[in-house]
Image (cartoon, rainbow, N blue to C red; front, side):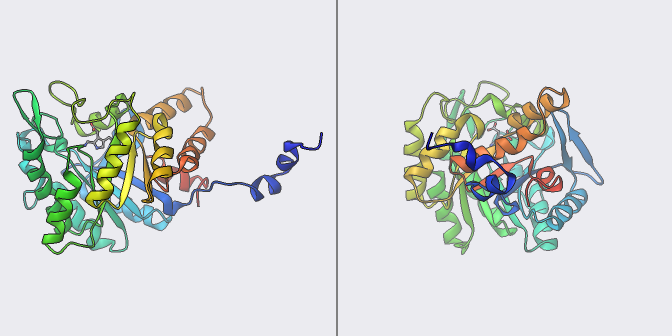
Amino acid sequence: MLQRPRRNRKSAVIRDMIQETHISASNLIFPLFIVDGENQKVEVKSMPGIYRYSIDNLLREVDSCMNIGLKAFDLFPAVEESLKDKYATESYREGTLYLRAIEEVKKNFPEACVVTDVAMDPYSSDGHDGIVENGEILNDETLEVLGKMALAHAQKGADIIAPSDMMDGRIGYIRNILDENGFTNVSLMSYTAKYASAFYGPFRDALGSAPKKGDKKSYQMNPANTREALIEAQLDMEEGADFLMVKPGLPYLDIIKLLNDNFDLPIAAYNVSGEYAMLKAAIANGWLSEAAIMETLLSFKRAGATSILTYHAKEAIEKGWIK
Ligand code: PBG
């Protein structure tokens, strides 16, 4: 045999020498859940090791992440049921939990990168990402709410705004409002190919944001489809997105590769709550070893994602798997 591929695997030094894919802390975005109150740190049942923090504890958590080199955060609010309404007005009300959280994080950690989530569902009494009328999700009316929300986030210092709603035209609409108000430097990370997935279950438990009726199939993508992802990505490019995101991550590695092969914007992968819950449950049962976590994270990078939103971010750095 002239070719013996095993020669390149014979020692740790050689294996490391030819390793193609690396992840560093700078590639990671850590999603954090926030709740109202003081001194709150409540574990999400289906996501061991992940908590809902009140703002005081959120700042402590951000501090401990910053100290280990984890500097990008995506914030998600758990909103009290009594504050929700049909039009998600709580999402842009001055003084609301989420806006205070953005402001506090940026005030205390100006060098942190704060990613904010734009979508109606945490604030919607219908639990949908758009305005619901007679069972239909209204697209263009929803854009107005998203625009107000995005502007409020920018005013509080958001570095990157990430619309996760999947309404048509929202990237262009939001880009326009930001620019008109002087926020030309605020970035947009579009949830470009967001699938109608069962893997969001634990997240909806964490926020109490599940749809009250129906599902999200009229706006989130059909898991069986690939070509629509190209249309969505093309539109996001034209409308001014700075990043294209694929979500969930693990069941859609082909979509990450597809977008990376076809578009020159950075690709983000969202390793969602259900993917986290699945690994954690198997590890807790002794059915998988913890090595499955890095193997999973590497797959996103290998498929072409430059940034990874993952609930594993902090532990992967703390355990020394990622530097
Ligand atoms: C909602 C939103 C969802 C997630 C991020 N933003 C859930 C949904 O669309 O129902 C899911 C994240 C996760 O599961 O980790 N706009």
